[in-house]
Length: 625
Image (tube, rainbow, N blue to C red):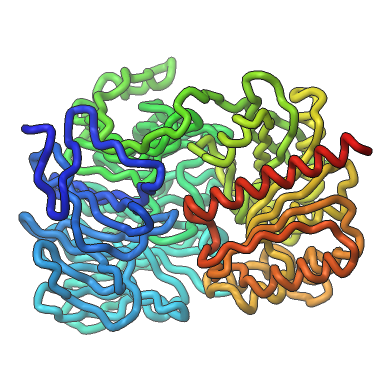
């Protein structure tokens, strides 16, 4: 094949080295079915589809813009017959390619689009901001549904191999999905306009990412019933729920949006998944009967898809920019437990480490500074209540002049070893970066995650202070110590401005400043989040809010905020900044027009520049003092 392939919109390089896209391009989601591969990529602020037809090696670029695909994907497109694909158009409707003809739309945005493996039906979720429902539409535009309409939230429908069943994840207020969610199994072959569940899988914990095993008589899903998040199965005939794949670390991140894919079954006895390793990660192969999955490739792998012996995933690391990678596992398949390949067999010594599977990079993001290669080290400490915690410490090659502690958002989330432009910029400036995984962090079992229940804005402050103490001896003397956080991490950072005097400054991006007011104005998924994190008394909600502590701010701070943020409304940040300034605090405020909860490359660059100026001023003031 030629190194250039004619595309639907324009020509891209499809050489054996793969397609290289700029750092302005965000690889967001992957779909694979019937030998076809689809990738959502945000290019110059516009989301487009990269399409690799079956049996080819080049990528076609769909010229029609598609609906914006966010950090956690969204089920943007799906193969729908030979040479065809269905996708979510920019206006939120379902369209077909080639041709761009509209199949269905009612003005509400569509997500989680997935095609039936046996006919032309498409399952999808409609979320209008106040409710979410699952539907099925065929090529004639005939609708079936709603499905699971008696639950507050529904996501990630998946078809059984014979097209008879749909499985979906559901949950209800006031729970978040990672606190308590269920899996519904719905018979969609029955002749009724509103199919009802035939099975409800409920373990009283978080169940997510349903996947049918190849034969279709068992449904796999991720469960943290055993504390770690690992694959379990549900047997359709008997209703039996049981652990399936065992391992030594969590597979998968908490449900934060549509269409996350951290694992896939690849046979009746095997699955691949992304295992957390104290912030590091690896794509692993788990086999029934083994207590530990074997490593296939290190790195954080997301949007994991499987089709006919091949695994696709988006992979990245501290030194590896995001890339779409293809792994050939055709020689690793074990159709049944009795047919395990030698390399995955279990013996007295445990699972044997397989050789690295054949793989190729199909799409990669150009590195803005390929010479900067810094891997973090894991730092561990124990909280005051005995909870074991860890974090990632990045040290610049020539010694650190500044220590910046970056508190992740969520607070249920995790600092992972990913390609991060902000961290790389800080390292290039000679700043050490510490990313603590404090209570509430995912990736290390349900116990650490649940330790934030009722403790947000209180115990996590102590965790950060103890973590900084643990790393200071490793970093050595520095010219300044700063704490930085975004969203819920911004709340922690702002509170530390009043509670931790041994700081030179605080950096907060789109921070939560008034918990109760944020609940009232935020999007509906997180509208009841604080009831679990803090409680529902007005007095306690205010006590944990930075807005209540503006009079005791003891260090300079910089706050950045996007005007289009639907999670943390800009008016709340403006009010906090005004009250802090009126109380005499030294506050630098940077407002970014049209930016949301998480900045575009342009917005991130502006925020980075402002932070650099702020830190410089703080260090200059310290030297004068």
